[in-house]
Length: 228
Image (cartoon, rainbow, N blue to C red; front, top):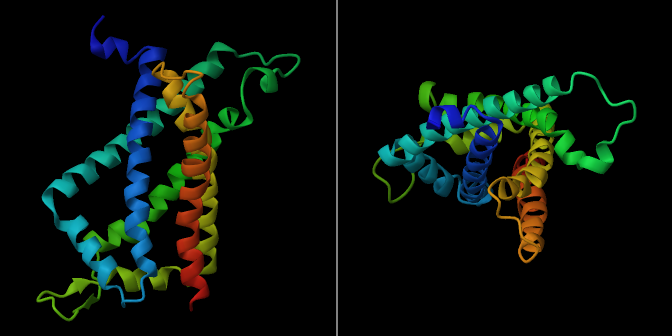
């Protein structure tokens, strides 16, 4: 079987979703670490320098565009799997066996994934799009020759809008529910689930990716809003 044919099968699609999902898990750790610099009391020097590096380094930009492609692949294939699974069972069970055959999180993956995708589009429009394609104020810091685009100021201005803060919190709830099931599911897809390691996989998936990381992302706009 050719690779193109293999990835059109249900198993091939699940492997693609799992692989892209784990790649995105590694990204959220790096992204959260960078975003925490928004809370430094340095007038945005650390965060703006970080944004400048991430926005103009050729290798980082190549990876960033690849990341956007990965997000699209992950979302499209995951939705295809959802629709194909539903088409294979067009008539609902007379008695819903959901609690016996799957977790609540797994049954909500399509909904939470859609919420998360909408959030990502809004997030890119609010920050990435403006940083790269709109006129932005700059800030010159002591010890730096070139002025930096003031993404720090844009972030603080954006998060004075309570509705956007609420939207970001909802997006992180979607991320939490998505990762709680998705992290564990990716290991199962690759056949890496084993009773010796399942406890660790569940702990990392639930407490680190499902709880701590989404809380970290959600706290940033909340703290910025409260600091006004």
